[in-house]
Image (cartoon, rainbow, N blue to C red; front, side, top):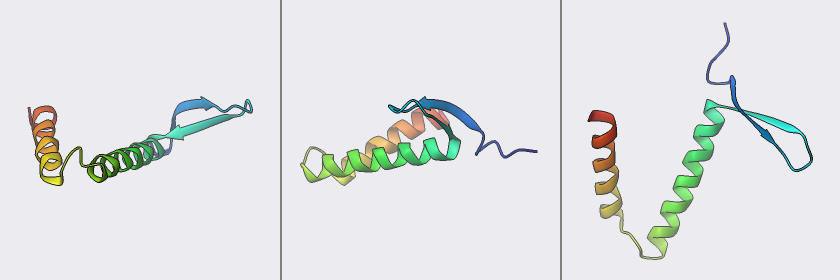
Length: 67
């Protein structure tokens, strides 16, 4: 039995022509890192504050996951 988390779900062709296969765990990690970088920049630039972010995350979470 194979581990579905490591099973490739996306094939990406690199500029050199080689193919990289990414699984669920890798895609989730990439998404998390990108999200973290974006949030950090928004807070550093003063465009959002932590309370505002947490409120919006809670609102979206409730809408989509408990909804």
